[in-house]
Image 1: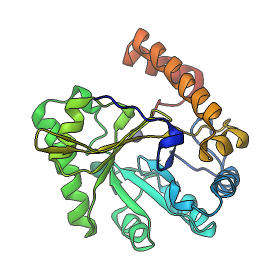
Image 2: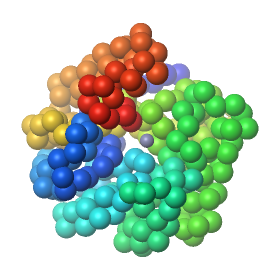
Image 3: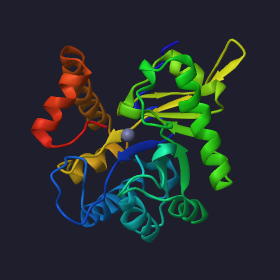
Length: 257
Ligand SMILES: [Zn+2]
């Protein structure tokens, strides 16, 4: 059942970004607009004439996604996929408003859910999970007047139970943080589970060579990035979530996504 298909077979290559910032802030996931533009050129070049095989995603709904990322994507004739925790919209300083997101959708970008409150779904009760999945989807659809069929997992955490709940809540595609992972939609007991697409979370120090390798589906690059992810994940499992977050913050002044 756990059919992991690696990147070379996956129909798309997905990247995950967070904040784009004009200042060099001390966060491994935060990159400058100049560097982001270099990434986009590199990706475009490596996929040649099939840019639809690229999915460039943004988690959390930072205002910089609207200010910098969207114009640069449009400049390179690409579109973004923006995942938003529905209760954060218009409520947090430095994050997008409903009007910003309506505009992104009107300009052809895709809007997805990133849960309601950014809770880790693997530790939610059934009723909380319903609110996080169906609640966030309905809020986004009602406020934006668009249909929402994709979600990215807060903290990259998911399991089969979460996936079934996503199916019941009407999602067709679930994005995770495991680079190279791909599992197509599966029919399971009357329910069609969503396709699961792993993303490569770009850091400031990620080289253009690696980005080029990943977007062109180079087997060696995908394998290397995947093993780095697994190594980090086993440290996380050993330390436990909270200790891992404290360590990460201490080292990089950042919250692991
Ligand atoms: Zn997030």
